[in-house]
Length: 286
Ligand SMILES: Nc1ncnc2c1ncn2[C@@H]1O[C@H](COP(=O)(O)OP(=O)(O)OP(=O)(O)O)[C@@H](O)[C@H]1O
Ligand SMILES: [Mg+2]
Image (cartoon, rainbow, N blue to C red; front, side, top):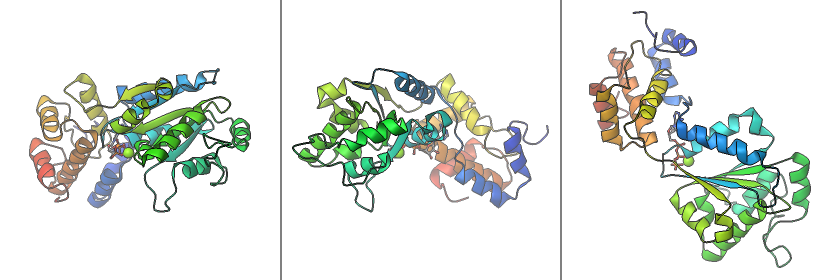
């Protein structure tokens, strides 16, 4: 068999690179493999953004435990040309510059960071100037990664951040809030029933033994520059991966990457159970 037949032609090219270069390709790989849940998210975003009446814009929360693939979906959304004008993106991970929720939203929407602030005159914190910008730039939605961080704050700040979220999705702004976070974000939204009812929910779960999982693994295998096929979708390998990782996305990807590096260093050029075992006990030991 010719080396790398199982790879796409662009990945097969990498087989001519040095071992070190291939290892660095594997560890830095940002390859994206579609799977049914991610496709569901993209479809829902398309449909939500197409809704013409935006008095109470439809919103979306994608929630799941750490490492289930939320930020990767956000990055993929960011890469789609069809969304680039319509969506703005905010990462709410606590920042070293200490910017808080309203300031991060202001910055993303392109208004001075002090402009969104709470007062009796603007209880949701939103100034009139914001409307011009949203209409002028034809912004339809705001993507908030790590949304739970906006709600894991003292109670009155949490309340304000919920009001701001609601304000953005209300007329006249009509922005669809597309949030990504852990389950506590879901619980926080529930505390405001009116806001909660605007949200469509998609939960990202761990992988289980299924055809979807096997085709995802084949997709991953097609990106890893090893000379021989590993048959990651075999019963033995899927069973081992699920048993050791509980089906968590980031652990699965990490284990496969480490095993692939072992496969290059040892010259085996394919991922085996033995190498997965090594990857599990010493992920950086190749
Ligand atoms: N569709 C995909 N194709 C290939 N790799 C993926 C995919 N989705 C996620 N991954 C990999 O899984 C890992 C974890 O994903 P990600 O960081 O998106 O999880 P998360 O849910 O945002 O985690 P956290 O809650 O810790 O922020 C990443 O290293 C990423 O490369
Ligand atoms: Mg994340």
